[in-house]
Image (cartoon, rainbow, N blue to C red):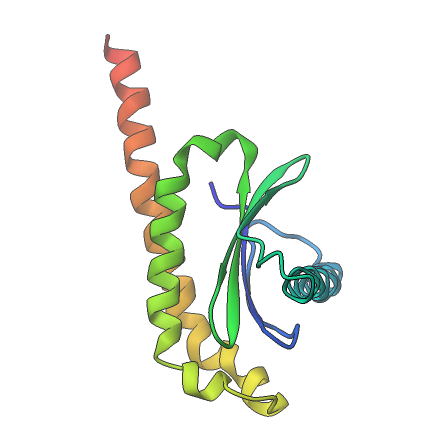
Length: 151
């Protein structure tokens, strides 16, 4: 349902990461750091040439939704097969954004210790929001499949 969610500080530091069903944590951590740097560079470049920040783009496998804020941006990887469900994913981004706002003052600046501790403070809350969203988002799918079986 959700391929991944990443909260990136505007400096490029990944401060929260969620990706279900991943086996290799070390390789995944390296990929998260690289992906965070890439997205941050793209956003900085687009600002510099006065085009405006990217909000959404598509790869071969995923639709990438980006929600910028003052000190961070939220990035969601959506499977292309779920492209028609953008409203559902937008609701998740809004809920995650509202939760992060509680800690936004802590994210103002370059304090590496604060950025490193963010996942510990906010990680549990954000993961709970995602798990709840995944559960709620799967209910209509199950109902549709059940209806198809009955009719």
